Image (cartoon, rainbow, N blue to C red; front, side, top):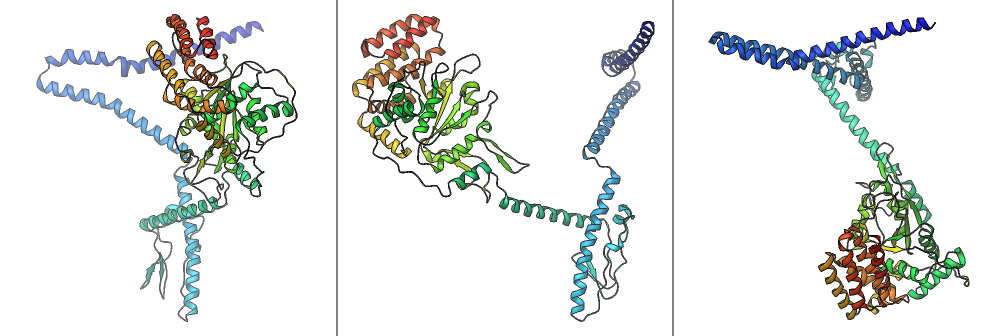
Length: 567
């Protein structure tokens, strides 16, 4: 048996070898004729051409042109055949099928004409005139080829009749001639009828379709919604202390008052917040418990590594199903337009994908100075059955929404760029707060408008002092001179919003400034080549102590010391 297998193997392998040699030889010969042989042809032509007389030169040129034209012509023919073959295969049609389709359409036209002539004959008979005969679809049999229909007479010629709407009517004989022009007219009329029918069908579909089923459910949910009684007397300090007590007593979550102040003051300075820190410190539970304190649970969106653009968050319109593929993020955006309370959307593990890719549109829209410009285009046109809060296919981002992202810094995540940091308010949670006991604290009902009003009152009551602004100007000049860093206009604006609210909740102005400088300004040192400016960092720490005092700016000095030790 093994000998037979060896025999079969050698025979088959030899045959395959010869076949491969034949294929290689074929393509090699083809290349030699049309590619590698071209320089040889040119050499032969150039060697003989100078010694030829004028007549021979003309013949030589003609011969060269003919030899060039033959392969080019063959190539063109082959390409045209391939294109024709591909087209026929793609459309799955041939001439016979086309003729059958033309015949079927002609029979439909004749049926319509048959009905029209019957109605016309009835009208004429009712008036007492002679009966008008008609020719309908009976004149066309299934076995009659389409070519005969296209080129021949379907009925007899009319004498003394008139032509109206493609139907020949008279007192004696009635008929019509299906020539090429009439066929073209019929085809054009049928095409126009199909377009009109399609347009009407689309209009009916638009009236009956529900493109946004999730948003439609939100409309139904709030059809008979009754708002709770809101507390418009609460102060910022009471608001923060109440949340800390609620998280402890109701959810057994513990936060320091410092973290609560930073979170609430961060809401005053930006609608985008980033919670950073090691795992298990309560980054996700902080916005979750805060939303429960407001009796308006947050929507938590888990960011995936494949997020690339806005469709991952907002969804997209499916042209086939005529429905918008909605997401929970879109539903939360839409539902916020029905609520008066602050609404929180959590982007969990937001730096698993590049934030500036999938969240780019939000970053730009929230920079608009007027909230009336916080609008996202979802679909180009409005349909009759669209949700109530969509205007011309656009959704409004209500100023009662805050986007809170959680971020880890490890090998599985992307670095958060300065573009995102500049627009957001980062809050660092690197340790768990100690447990404590407190009396039960119920949820509160506060409108976002009242919260914004408390922020505004705090900014008017506790603005940055002149002495602090002078110190910041000195620090800004020092950073620009030594490190080419600056406290930009956006950070200055965030300071003017953050610091007063932080003070109103029970903190100090210097602690608030210290936090902003360490998290928004000195954070940029990580993008510098610190090995070259390590000695300069010591001078910066000394300069901070000089203008702010040795006991002040603890977070900033600790941060500088930490990054200096890393390099």
